[in-house]
Image (cartoon, rainbow, N blue to C red; front, side, top):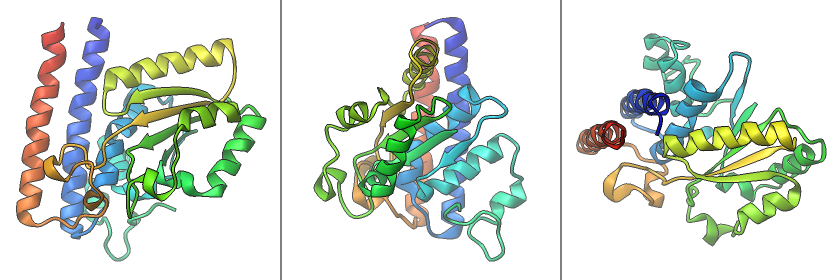
Length: 247
């Protein structure tokens, strides 16, 4: 890893740790929240905002259950105030639980015909100004995605529609950086829409609750909140140390 890439990863690790702490506090204060959904896409949203998007780019968070993660990223970028964040989910807030390009969708969302209709439109018109990121955490609100409506082979289906498809670890900033470079090369050499399948873990970092349906919607007790913050703190310390060790 180059010195520049290492520095970028360290910056992103700091950002995502701050973002996760913020939205966990938001969910705890609201006594409600889709924690699993936010933890599966936190790295994706942080990477898009702080390492890929240009000033005039737009992100559409189609997986609205992770709204607090998006709000936290915007606060990290100084686009929302502490007062905005403190009002989350309260009467009169401008930060509702679900918000009314880069487009980030869930995998459970792929059960819907409207999603595939949009995919047909994007591919037919070769909309190269859109990058579609699919948060593939394998779990939706009621069960595992493959038990509700099987999606696999998802990559082959998207290629059949006319997309260039990249498959990455959605929690690994180095992998996301590689996808960014591949995407830019694709758009320069063979313009076509790009879909990134980001393989993630629902509730990533929550110990026994990660990769479970229970993490989808989780009002936290004081004990659960303290444990979650502790687990994320220890994971952050390990992640921040790893790039320097590798260098």
